[in-house]
Image 1 (tube, chains in turn cyan, blue):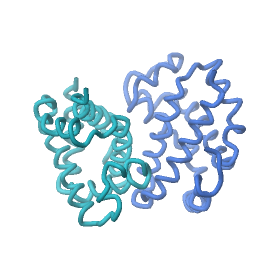
Image 2 (cartoon, rainbow over the protein chains, first blue to last red):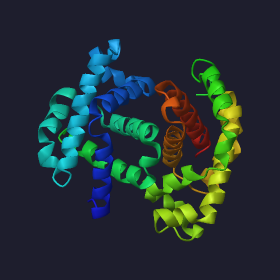
Image 3 (cartoon, helix red, strand yellow):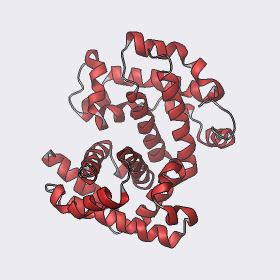
Image 4 (tube, each protein chain N blue to C red):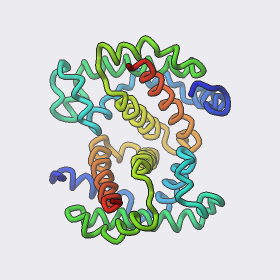
Length: 141
Length: 150
């Protein structure tokens, strides 16, 4: 349940990311692999060589999905259903890993955007990403 | 946790500290403010703190400032005792369990928030490697604080 204010803050955060999906996405993955090496198990080819082109490409894809979630933040289940199927049937990423990704996301935004990424924006963004994670893992059983 | 060298990249942290002079952070209470705003359920331990009704109320609250300073000072001590965190934090661990009744999960939340504050402050200098080093430190502190729970 997002308040109007939270919706606005989430949209604000996305405005700061839009156009930089590849760059932010690649750094997000790099931080994830560096800070939480166990997450590499879910990205065997990507994490082994950490090729910049592949990181940018996969990062772009992940953040594009986040952008789609922002567009549909009031009906995440419907919008993310195919991705939820993918995570449940194919990827099967343990749910404990999503908070690790979310933490790295906050660090990417805080380090790049500094004062533009306010405390209230972080609160709304954390709530939103946590909701996305719930939807992505909802079909696991 | 509490092992030397390769688990806590001591040289990296030492280098970071020299450049960044972490003592400056003790007076910057924003970590605690950020914890109470981003994870509002953590406010449950601070009923006696007065007005926590909005982010600006929390930011201006003198008790939040004072407590933030206490917590961050303690954290600064941790940096000096990284090979011996469990001993260094034994008494505080007992206090948080027996008197304060704080769920250890909150130590992890505060640690993560502190890392975000560092990222905000240092920008691009807060590289993935530096983040990794600090996440290990905050995880070590969180574990040390939870160690005496029973």
